[in-house]
Length: 222
Image 1 (cartoon, rainbow, N blue to C red):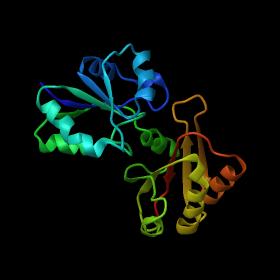
Image 2 (tube, helix red, strand yellow):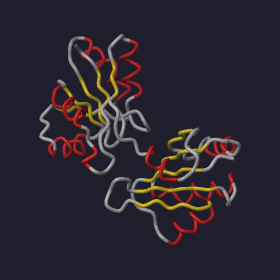
Image 3 (spheres, rainbow, N blue to C red):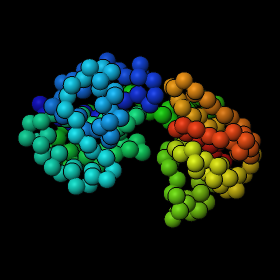
Image 4 (cartoon, helix red, strand yellow):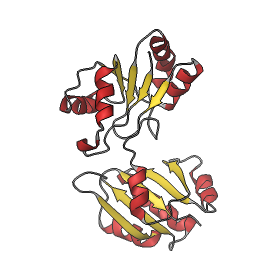
């Protein structure tokens, strides 16, 4: 039966690939990859020879309708991102929505997502939380932070290394320097590290030690 599979891939350590994910990627007709060069290394490691097609944020709007029609016509496809679960701060939502609107079966496999280990590692309450992804870079950033200042649930953010200091400064300004923060970087990789403390303490740490790698920020609710 034609179907779209959403297949999570490792966020760092290749051993975090599941047996089922490997099986699906070997059996589908086509793999939709965010960056075929990055995904090519993963496929080569697991001896997966399925053809790939580039599917990323710059072309997904014009591709989803055609891809859905191909699946409907009998092709089976798997969507992967560079790391983690597709559609979580990565391309995927538009294609899933299009497939559902066309009555095409969609199946998402369980697997790696960066914010889950970061949340558990933080030591902050994880019974209720809100995933914010990346904050707006300019327009809407101040408004969003003002709104989140009243959020009572634990908050989860993604951030790039060169924007981390600005974001931590914003946390101090809008949430207060005493708000508890946990920053995890390079999860599952050789230099994995989690820095915990108040917003002021964590900012001071990264002011003296330049951040590197992918970052997940966990912030205590009000």
